[in-house]
Image 1 (cartoon, helix red, strand yellow):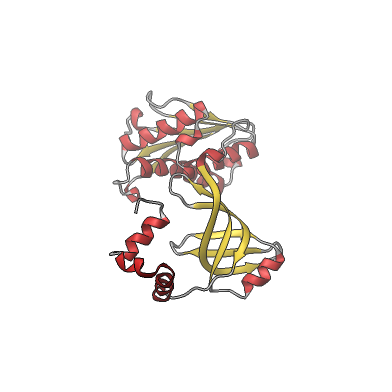
Image 2: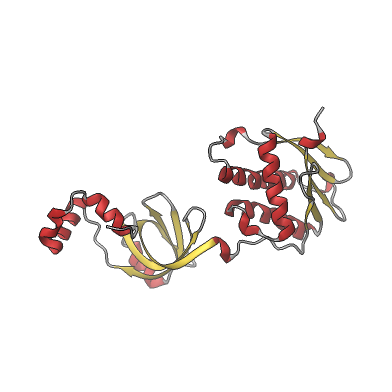
Length: 261
């Protein structure tokens, strides 16, 4: 038997909303989206926890409705994440959630709009009941981002298309896509699999400083030289002052991140 205070419920009600009227993939997507929303909160709040060991198990589907009941693997931690989600839904304070959790809840909202139904998340008395309807707006707002001018360096992995785009891989393995002009596409095509320098306007996620969007403004002439050559050139500009720097790598890092030197 499962104790009632350990159960989380996710239900959908509306005309034609029954298990036999939904694709299995739709139900699976709803379950996966809700679980992902929970896991991203747990990952943020409890970085010490191995998320592979945290999940929700589907224990019951009621007839004549889409009413799903789940039993958390790690009860207290998952219930706390469920409370965080429902509180955000009831107050429209989505900026309190991780970026990926809002993305996942957006998929559930999209389902309610597509099917014109009402979703409800509930559980024990600690979890405030929250609803998601077609009128609910769960979107990624500007509150999640920093925005500003930036210069990025990365390897061109792909360029072209009916609507010209470039795919660039940064040195931290992040992949950036940007729409570009045909003239820029022709230029960058010559640098395929080479490191390029691009100036533009970026949006960074506040929670992890990953670039979410990049608008290219200029392709900068750039020669990707070995670090030894670059340091030698820099020394030639600075002169003897360079010899007074005991740790050049740390010095450059401090400049890059605008720390005190």
